[in-house]
Length: 227
Image (cartoon, rainbow, N blue to C red; front, side, top):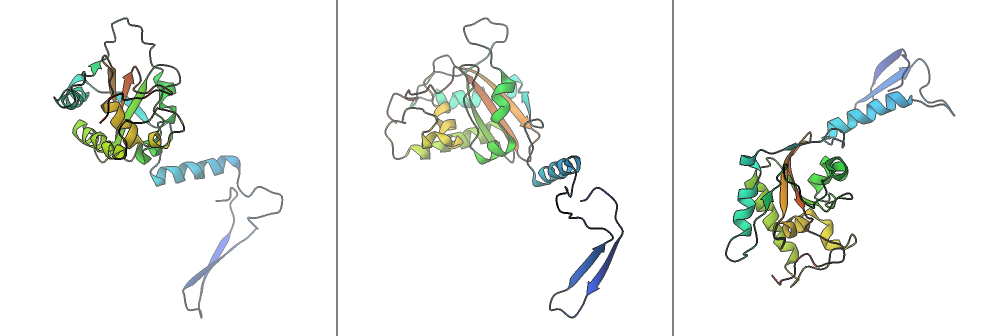
């Protein structure tokens, strides 16, 4: 990976238990107190490694707002409004309306939503600039049906609690997407504006839904009724 060209001769080594190859360079590649590789070449190496490993950075990840037919509200609300839950449906954000909600800075909100974080299920969920939070899904295909089924499975995270604890940034339970996605799905908001996005640029397909107001508030119970 050195920058300057070198003459190289390679030889097969015999007489050993394993096959071996020895290559000799005309000039040393490692010289004391000298950078073996320039900063520019090293950056290219890191970029290549990242591309081959299947991870992309926040400059590559892309969020595309879903059309009404694929915005997942029908699937989400079918679950929320079932008789056993009786929750209010989420509603689509009307871009032409004027309300008290501060517009979401989606660029700021997306800073922590890297491909790696979405796939690992540890992405940050709270906006620093607006009263908004996210729920997300990453998988082989990001259909509303698959996302909803995954979000519902988060119930298992609360099998040993009667009421979920207060939300704090240090609460271990809320450090996993499985838990926060489930709580977002069954949040008690009565007029939650929801916008869902298709995530592209990752090795897995993704879905991110932005909720306003946020499903969580610091030092408050996200759910007030027992499961």
